[in-house]
Amino acid sequence: MTDLRSAQWYGGDDRNAYIHRAWMRRGLPDSAFSGRPHIAIANTASDLTPCNMHLNDVAESVKAGVWEAGGVPLNLPVVSIGETQVRPTAMLWRNLAAMAIEEMLRANPIDGVVLLGGCDKTIPALLMAAASVDLPAVVVPGGPMLTGHFRGTPLGCGTDVWRLSEEVRAGTLSQEAFMRSESAMIRSRGHCNTMGTASTMASMAEALGMTLPGIAGTPAPDSRLLALSHETGKLAVELVAAGRRPSDVLTKASFRNAIVTLAAIGGSTNAVVHLLAIAGRAGVDLTLDDFDRVGSGVPLLVDLQPAGRHLMDDLYRAGGLHAVLNEVSDLLDGAAITVTGRPLVEHLAGAEIWDEEVIRRRAKPLLDDAGIAVLKGNLAPDGAVIKPAAASPELLRHRGRAVVFESVEDLHARLDSPDLDVDETSVLILRGCGPKGYPGMPEVGNLPLPAKLLAKGVRDMVRISDARMSGTAYGTVVLHAAPEAAVGGPLALVRTGDPIVLDVPARRLDIDLPLEELATRQPSAASVAAYASPARGWERLYVDHVMQADKGADLDFLTGASGPDVGRESH
Image 1 (cartoon, rainbow, N blue to C red):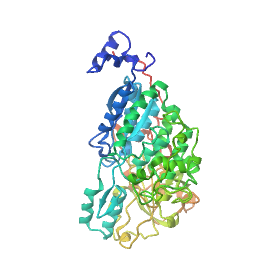
Image 2 (image 1 turned 30 degrees about the horizontal axis):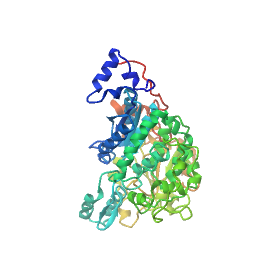
Image 3 (image 1 turned 180 degrees about the horizontal axis):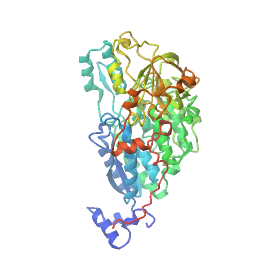
Image 4 (image 1 turned 45 degrees about the horizontal axis):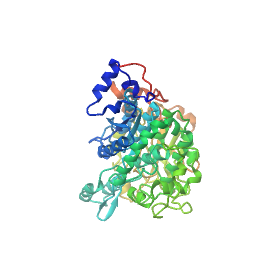
C-alpha cells in the first residue's frame, strides 16, 4: 500500500529504503515491509514509575492484536514520569514528555500508535503528543490497583495517606500503626485506586473518545484488561485503514463530554490543566470558564474517595464508567465520535448500575451540582478552581483572616509552631508554587493543618494557593490561582491579617481591601527570593516559556499541531 506513511521509509529499491528495511528485519518477515501498517506502542513502562510497571505485559497483548489484524507492532519506550517518585514535581516534565513523544512519533516510520499510560502525567502527555502529531492513535489506560485493607478497613491510596498522616499529627493514631499500614496501602499492580488524577485521566481519555469503549477503570490485574488491550491492537490497524485521526475525535463536543464526565465521577482538579493543554494541542477553543459553564448542574453520581466512600474496583464492579455516563447521557453531546467512528453515546446503551451505593441514580445523586467551580475576583483575576464535592459545605462561603506562607519551606518551618497566630476561621495562603514559581506547579495546595488546630479536632480549613493538589486529596482547597504570585499575580500582595472572602456559590475569591491599598504594595522579599531561577537545562526552558494554569500550563511554543510530515531523508 503506497499510501501508508511507513512506505516513505520502506518502499522502493534505492539505498535509503535498503537501509531502513535491512536494519529493521531482525526476524520480521518480508511481508512486514510491503503494505502492512506499522503500529508503534508508545510505552511508559518504567520501574521508576511504579503505577506503570506492568505496561510491558499490556504491550504484549496489544502486539498480539496488531499482528492478528495484519499490522506490525513495534514497542517504543517513551519518557515516563512517576508521580510519587520524581522531584520537585512530576508536572515539571509533563510538557517535556509530550514534546519528546511527539517528536519520536513524527520521526519514526509508523502509521499509527497505541498509547500506554496510567500514572497521572503519562496519559495527558501521550494525548498532548498524539494531538500534535495527528497520526491514528488510541489509548490503553493501565488501570487501577485492587483495594488493600488495614485493620479490616479498605485503604484509598493517596487519600488515606493524607488522612492517616494527619491523625498521627493530631495524636489520634500512633506512628507505629501508621507505619504498619504502609505495606497494605499498595496491594497490586496499577495506579491509585481512588478517583485521583490517574483514574480521572483514564476516564477523560474514554470520555474524549480516545479509547476502546468500556476499557477505562478496568483494574490492572484483571485479565479483561489484557483482552481489551488485544482488541485495541486490532483497532489501531483499523484506524490506519480508515484514516481516522485524533483531529477527528478531539473536538469541542468531545471536550464538553469530558467536562460532564469529570463532574459526574467527582474527578480530580488536575484534569482542568490537562484538558486545557490537550485542547491547546488539538486546536480546540477550550477555556477555564467552559468547565464551570458545562459542568454546572451536573450531579455527582460516583461515591468514591476522596469525595465519597468507595474505590475504583468497586466502581468497576458496580457497572463502570458507562453505567455512570448512561445516567447523564442527555447531558452528553451526541455529535462527539470515538476512535470506533461511532458516537460515544451509542456505546452506552444497555449499561446498567449493579450497585446503587457506588453509582447513584440520577434521581438520588450525592450532590446535585458537582462540577469544578471556577472562581474569579481580585485575588485570582484569571481564575482559580475548587472541587466542591471534596470540600466542607459550611466553608464554601467563608470570610477569614489570612495566614500567609511565603514558600513551601516557610510552611514546613512555621506550620506547627505553637506561636503561629492561627485559628480555625483563618485562611491559609501559600504562594510561589505556580508553574514558574516552583517551578512546575507541585501538588502542595492541600496544606496540612496546623498541629494545634488538629489537636482541637479541626479537620478542614480554607486553603488558597497557586499550586495544584493531588487528585486523591480533599478539603476546602482553592487551587491554580492565576496569575500566580511569581508573575505578579495578586496572591503575591497578600499579608497575614488581610480579610479573605471565599464565596463558591457566587464564584468569587477576593481580598477585602481597597484597590488603592493593594496598588501600593510590593511582593515580599522572602517570597521573591524563593521563586525558581534555574540557570540551564529543561527548567530554564520551562520557566521561560510555560503558560499559566488557566492556559493548561503548556509551553507557549507547543500549542497547536505540527502534523506527521517529515521533510528530509536521514541518509
